[in-house]
Length: 178
Image 1 (cartoon, rainbow, N blue to C red):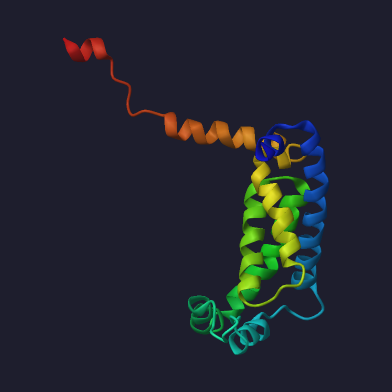
Image 2 (image 1 turned 60 degrees about the vertical axis):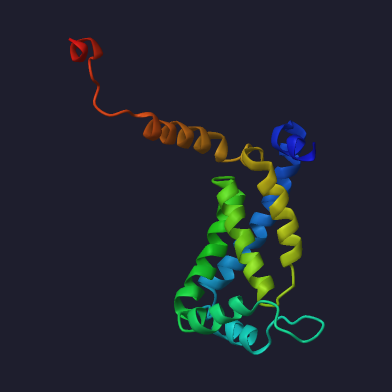
């Protein structure tokens, strides 16, 4: 019932507009500081901290062992690449949400980053971003209706459906039967 309202109601699209703009602004500001800040963004300190202090359970056991292995063996050696991806990813998620263009893709990747931050042990504003991002994701197209998605999504749907509905060479069946 709630998801139906989020996906179809005009009043929900207005509420979603404000949530999307607020969340987009947060992501954009985080990304701008990382991309255009006085010193280049470097995620290696964050990654080293997450490796040194993994998230543990009540008995002291490491909760996300495979994720910590990923940080140690993939993310830390490739910290330059991951620094670039985080900085530009935050900026692009913010732009997508602010402009309402490819909204569901933008919020999906924002949620992915939030979950990675939480797996690394950072709480901060991430749970709030996850809550609002999930609402926007559940709303689907209605969340970007008051934005670029109003034009972009129908255009993309027509292009994609054209790719899948094209058949092979046209065969004149009457000629083939004789």
